[in-house]
Amino acid sequence: MATLKFEDAMARLETIVSELEKGDLPLDESLKIFEEGIKLSKTCLKMLDDAERKVEILIQDKDGKKRLRAYSPDDEEADESSPSA
Image 1 (spheres, rainbow, N blue to C red):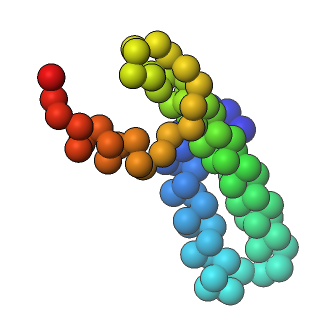
Image 2: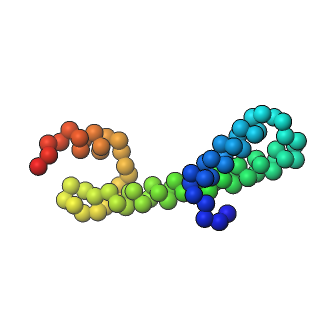
Image 3: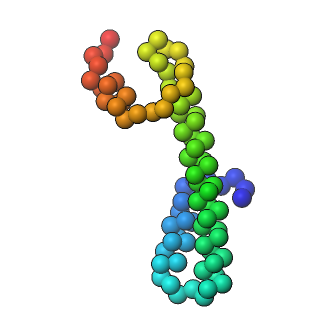
């Protein structure tokens, strides 16, 4: 697949799910768009994994040094509760 935006891939996946849920398509067409959906799903997962890696790389520790660590919602709460300098 060419350079596909995540949002476009998700929109197409939603369309595919709707079409399959209706059940109006012939079997051949259902299989064809199901395969397309699987490919789009894998593409979206890869994009999300890549984005997660970028976020992990950009997170900095308290000394201002960049270090790899996973994002946690608790980090955000701690930042909001700590006094501003």
